[in-house]
Image 1 (cartoon, one colour):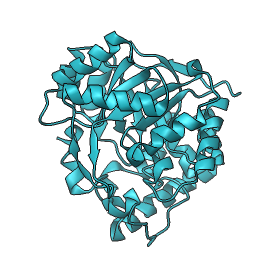
Image 2 (cartoon, helix red, strand yellow; image 1 turned 180 degrees about the vertical axis):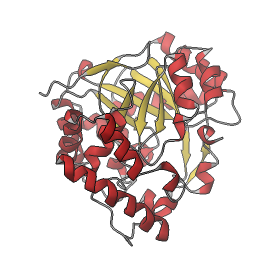
Image 3 (cartoon, helix red, strand yellow; image 1 turned 60 degrees about the horizontal axis):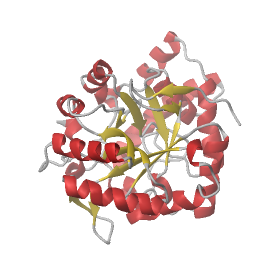
Image 4 (spheres, one colour; image 1 turned 135 degrees about the vertical axis):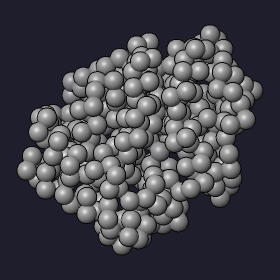
Amino acid sequence: MTNIEKVRLGTTGPEVSRIALGAMGMSGSYGPSDETESAATIHAVLDSGANLIDTGDFYGHGHNEMLIRRALADRKREDYLLSVKFGGLRAPNGEFVGFDCRPAAVRNFLAYSLQRLGVDHIDIYRPARLDPAVPIEDTVGAIADMVEAGYVRHIGLSEVGAETLRRAAAVHPIVDLQIEYALVTRGIEREILPTARELGIGVTAYGVLSRGLLSDSIRAGQAFAPTDFRAHSPRFQGENLTANLRLVEELGEIAAAHGVSVAQLAIAWVLSRGDDIVPVVGARRPERWAEAVAALDIRLSPEDLARIEAAVPADRVAGDRYAAPQMAMLDSER
């Protein structure tokens, strides 16, 4: 087992590994996945010394939670922490049709997640998005009731703005904000990250590889399956993809000088932003997880960081991170 450093998540949260696993890709969000490989990856995560696994009850319409349950069947409950998002509503064809974060829905979604995961509590429970029809105080208050009842240990949030963070934290301690943060997605630096730090709220950063863009897996003109998120993401379309891959090429030169992969350099950059930021890496194979863990050993000097950020200026990234309808659902983008 590797001795991965542990950090406290926020000022009131649990101790988590310096890097975490995001399991969404194991349930078809980025094209077909292999269940045996997925389970092996989850085992590799725990064997490496990492302990935080992130999922959502709507990933694969519950498939992701059941996969995690099977993969963790022979592991001790105290060896892993489960972070679960709820509230996403999906049609049978996979289309997102809204969010439901009413107090009654909180209890309902939680009951199903506990059953699918085969556990008696969830370590961090969070609404996947802000429900515009429900005050955040009501949603957080309902989760707080589940904390008091013992079904939830900690409360997190996802993709909310600074004002919503403040309102939520006034109701109950918030341990972390899960939000996209990467070299090519740096909007949180303006207001959200300073507010989180002021309130003692950690950040679990997803999309650190920008869904494979910051890696060796995407090529110009690449076609994506209709069920693949990237088939509908502006950053992966036509000239946008071509322009973004030019940035990745520049990053590749820096990575080569360090003897590391582009993905490792991208993860190392996020790690450099502070111990209160935990990258959530969406590995689907053990070798990809091993590659991510190796990023923990990369040390970037101020000169390195300046060169990386000059190679990939945030204002040169082409295309939004979500399609317009999904961007409209993000409180963090308002």
